[in-house]
Image 1 (cartoon, one colour):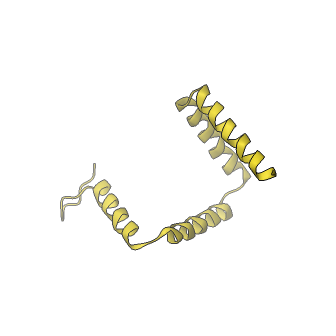
Image 2 (cartoon, helix red, strand yellow):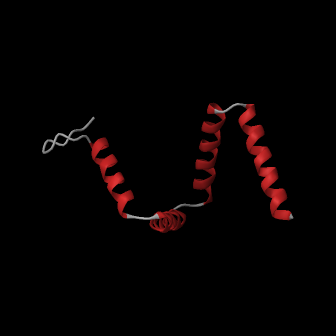
Image 3 (tube, helix red, strand yellow):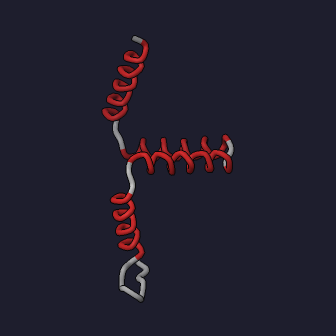
Length: 87
């Protein structure tokens, strides 16, 4: 782990402290706005294949770490949400 020679803090610790300080100074709307800007920038810089690839990787990672009960539960929740939206 890299350590800053000036104060002996690792990058990880510095990043954590910076994140904590930022979260104290900003509200939910700030994070929503920067997330939206980031999403727009990503969409401008990447094509359909990029999103297909990251979706596939995410699906594979999820499949490795969850069992049938997980998929049963999220399927049930999705069905309930869909039914509630159609009422």
